Image (cartoon, rainbow, N blue to C red; front, side):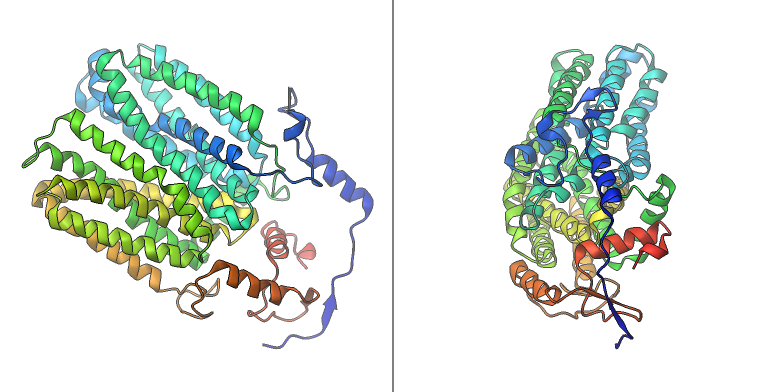
Length: 499
């Protein structure tokens, strides 16, 4: 593909607009009233160091904010007794929480590409803490249900932090940074159920929400003292333009669509496995008590804690290969469940741990690949991925339970194995270096080492940067920052500044 006349980019911005832009990037207060600690204020000449402490604080915040979505699940019987209503009526509470969460993912998470992340995290956690106070004291079921719905909407802090971690981390540590936040999120799901079940068994269920208030207050204080301020990324876009472009990414990006389909199937498998595990262990040949079944959550926790180590492995590989390894391991461990899950408890323990580790590896590698599409759209891209996981959860809960009840544990396990095979088939449709806008294919070779691929890309980008009046050769893409600037101008309709 040959282009016409070539023009070298030589224009420089005038000093005054540049100075005004830098001034607008640096804030000294949150919400105009709370002073930002000086060490956390944005300094364009001194980028933040995204160290282990900051990364772990992101994971801690994810753990004790996402827990808000799951405290209610083991407490439904206690709610029924306390409010004096039937089990059928009280069963709407988890549905309301999840419905609110879906709305928050769709309408609030994309704001990470439009506003400053420090302020939105502080605001979301403050609002969820305030609403949790209401949960702990209200005697009215309708008020309780409304508060649960609203808490679901604002409990999207982990989905703001995950793209921020990808922005702050260096490219060679990006997968590790994402895996720590994801581990915190997964840990929060498991811890919430265990803590709520134990506390609700020995004390009033309201103690659970008083505890939630306390840990969220710790998150607010920690975020204020540790979370760095970072400029908004797309100030030339409006909120509705952000939502429009998110929808556009969801239907025009082959990698996003491929990842979403894999996520739906993977999330359905994960949810179905854990829901039906209760039925399996509570029936023949095990007949375990509720407490014994709950202890299997600790096996899952060990799998989650292995996530950061998996992230280091992914950092050294092209994400596609990490996804391939993870999907193959999912098939292997699910095969163990198919063969002996209903015969020997050792098979259950092995599959439980292995599936957790492999699924986390799969999700981190897929997120890493999708985040590389655009640095300025990571919140929107992450919202699409999380919505696909949510859809998978709904499917897995209903379909998995139906198959288990009708046909037994092995039929359910075989269904999940088939879904893992589907994920492998979806993955191999596009090779590790398939061009961005190609729906199928294996162009670009088979190199698995990320360092080698990046070195080759630097060699391509090293000559003087030029733009053309004609179409560009696809084999010489723009450097990442120039591409993101171009995409942002096109999204905002500023065609004149797109070149």
